[in-house]
Amino acid sequence: MRAYRALLDFVGRAGRLLSVRFLLISLATLLLAIAPASAIADDADPAKEARAFQNYFFKKFPNVKPDDFANGPYALNEDMRRQWEEKEQFPPYEFSLEAGKELFAKPFANGKHYADCFPDSGIGIRQNYPQFDGKSGKVVTLELALNQCREANGEKAISYAGDDMAALTAYMAFTSRGKPFDIKIPDDPRALEAYEDGKRYFYTRRGQLNFSCATCHVQNPGERLRAEVLAPALGILNAMPIYRSEWGNMGTISRRFITCNSQVRGVPLEPQAEEYRNLEYFLSYVSNGLPISGPGSRP
Amino acid sequence: MASSIRVRAIANGETTDVQTLIQHPMDSGFIKDDKGAFIPAHYIKELTFEHNSKPVFIADWGTAVSKDPYVKFAFKGASKGDDLKVSWIDNKGETDTATFKIQ
Amino acid sequence: MRISLKTLLRIGCTMASTILAGSAALAVSTEADFRQAYAAADAAEKQAGILRNQWIVTEAALAEASRAAGKGDFDQAIAAAKEAEALAKASIFQATGEKAAWKNLEIRP
Image (cartoon, rainbow over all chains, first blue to last red; front, side, top):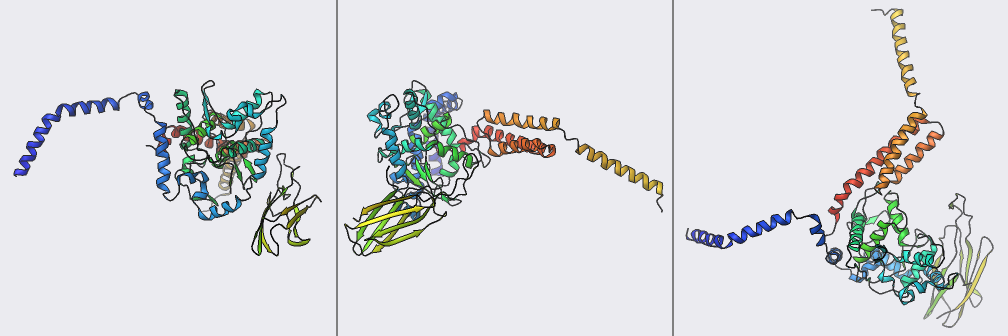
């Protein structure tokens, strides 16, 4: 009885002290609840989202070293890893890599080279792509930059899903091996919009099979889809381009996005479509800090 | 033109471990091209590894072997510094050969 | 009770004419009907295209409709066109729903 009265006294006193504050807090909550959507979007924090993205996978696979996510399914399956490590002594992408080195060094008709279009002569820079280009207001991937380089020097663009683009990006990835992804979102609302668009694309269900990228690579990494082991979304672009045994040759990021779309029975978009570039931007950004492991080989 | 054959042969005591990667389309003849025509079969028929002019590994291949085949095997009787000769012939009669030092 | 021959004949004629009328109705799938069905399917697929969310199976059904129509099999062509329209509409429904639903899968801080 005495305790109860003490409690009542306490509540009464606390109530008198807190009543005004309580009113203010509830008022503020109400205001926040009806705040315009743009105010909430301004609080969008890609860096925080990237950390949450990475932590999701670190928690899901506590025995995997963070950097190892750059090796996709091999980080999650011992048997596959063993076979892959053996093959890495004589990797199937060797021929494409050598071809890429030759292609990169070959001058254009006007005498210039790919090296003239990139900082550091294009060596060891792959981890900085995609970039947001303030002038054009769009995301520039490495593949797009290579074709822009060609066209700026009077050459015809090459196919984004073809062997030459795969070989070129393989060589450039190889020169960046071990370097951590360093994707920047500049202080430009268009850049943030591109990141958000890529994020939205990643999580959106599509195709008759009604899968989103996340369905396989966030909800089911390490699980089997038919005979394949699904890779985690974290680090999934770090090994690109990849020699895929299924393809029997080297394939670019463009090619993989297109085939992933058709695999869920969605009509693919055109290579380097805005959605694809934004998707690459988002996926690369959330893997910031993880090392480039390309060119890679996959089943 | 670079050779189609890549070899890594390492002597481990009595045994020599050999790994090979060969660049070859290994077309089965069952795949169609973009225009719907069959890509003719083009595959390595015989692959031979020789040490001291003696064959130590012979592979009789057909259409079941995939593109850019990789071979791994081990054999006895060789030492570091010895020569290992690799040669292949395909169904079109094309050939390639290369010699490597066992490391 | 014995059914008279006249009654039997009358029943038989009614049945026959019903059947004939029925099959006549079926046989009247014209090219015009196909064009109408195909246009509806095509319009829906174009709408799905604007939403950047077309399905491969829709395209396949449209192709099947054209192929059947080319062979003069308008019944089959219309069936395929209706299937294509349904698939296209489903893909539109998917795209529209996903505009908000994608957030359900999002990894958030």
